[in-house]
Image (cartoon, rainbow over all chains, first blue to last red; front, side, top):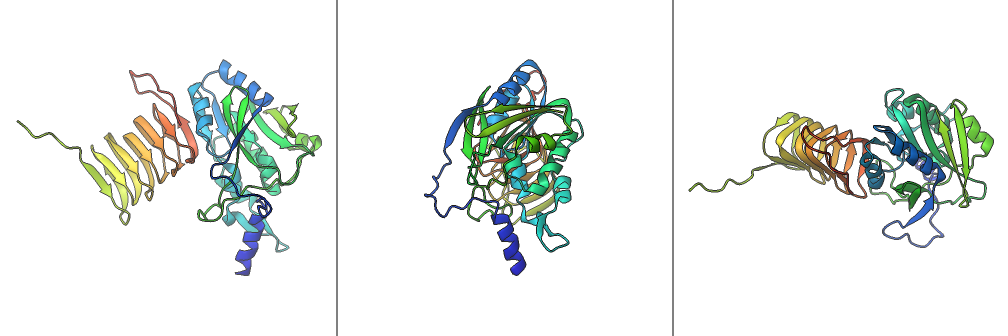
Length: 233
Length: 122
């Protein structure tokens, strides 16, 4: 019982506290933002045919429609949700509860090498457990084609610890609809849906180190405390 | 004068577990568990809210309201409704995904020979 409680505690720290907030609406509201990174990816999608796109956010019907209407293949995998599976937690040598990154990588992102032309990470690195971020980015390098592009969003230092985790829906070539993410723990569908918690704020040096193996990196700064990063494999 | 033919609907109830290959030419509604392969070349498959299918599916149209783990190859359409939890690749000329559905896999809109592909919808 004590072990189960500690596992639950370790998982719950990934969710934002809702005790001081007003009741969440029945349907998460959507905002919009203009995305320079998405504009560049849309240009790529409009000029080439038959690309393979990997979307690492929660399932988005509009994203699937956007990509396949342009004649591309869309793959969906909600990696953040998968990373919260309590079954992934193990004890390290000092008895601390950590996520088994090897099992996580073995069970997720199971694709052939050099498969994807476009990878949409969205805000995944900001909300994912620390020990999984670098292995995930390294694995994405393997499954991307040379010259493939990856888009990721990082909060700047101005973002507070309770920054809302959004799901991004592509509504136009450079316009994203933002929908607050809330989900129950994997394997516990009846548990209360909560929002993931911002785990860290990367600075530019951290981001460059994270994508060290990639060929090039481009930053786009926006007014909403989000830094868009477009990297080329 | 012959009586009009009624469309038969096969039903796998909640408590039923089937392991193996299912094939036929009529519609199938699954509320139980099916593991293996489902082939309904001229029929439609519906996985009900409590259905749990771990199989590769070939059918005319597929509607998923429950769980499906496997590939779907539908000659007409695939519909993932809001309670659907789908893990596997979907290939069909027309794919509709409701908000709330969960998909882990590929969506490939391919047109059968002689037809143009339809757009995806939500």
